[in-house]
Image (tube, rainbow, N blue to C red; front, side, top):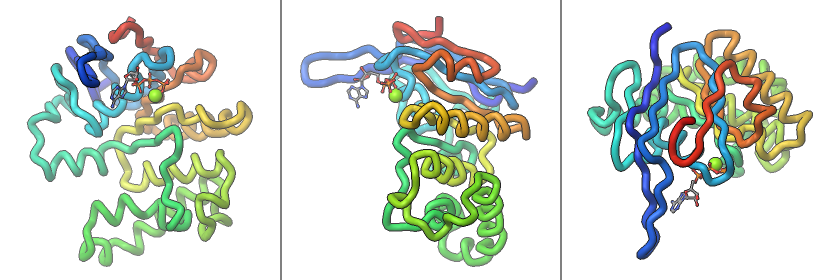
Length: 228
Ligand SMILES: Nc1ncnc2c1ncn2[C@@H]1O[C@H](COP(=O)(O)OP(=O)(O)OP(=O)(O)O)[C@@H](O)[C@H]1O
Ligand SMILES: [Mg+2]
């Protein structure tokens, strides 16, 4: 199996006034293509911090992240944007959908950003078809005109997953995707992630819940700033 992403010696310290908080202390991690990895750790152990660093939403103080053997620190700004919006799909714990847009528009947004105004018009038809296919697959075909605030939590999270997948990322990063949902709804989201993984999607999921983590094929435990 090929390694899709690896991190070596990741350190991250937050400074607040005089005090410093060492969150990640030389963390190493490697994930293969096609894996469904769960990263588990207590609240405050640095799971979100790590996921943000892997997705280039935040920068480590030391260490490096390699995506397909290439150090993302060596990427140009343009390539980094493509990485964030194309190679990686991010699912946030609190959905982060835009209430001003309907479901379909929310899902299309990363594709619009990727293609730019001119590119968007030439790709619009095929991208819309992909968005509709994803929404249909996630049981949201009759919700496309709804605004996020008109949806249930589970529906919102499925929209967020469709949005994360619209640009066909090789790597899906999910930060507590069930953290805000009741157990039955959360189970529905886990099933969606399992099905995606069954189709070959590499998934890294963060959770503080051992039961949820056990749904992953590999469990990585984060404690005291390192993988234990
Ligand atoms: N921007 C920031 N500035 C200062 N401290 C921060 C910042 N972001 C996170 N922290 C601190 O770093 C630690 C790790 O935060 P992080 O969000 O990565 O934890 P987590 O494992 O995701 O926790 P949870 O399970 O509660 O989501 C926490 O103690 C948090 O207070
Ligand atoms: Mg977190």
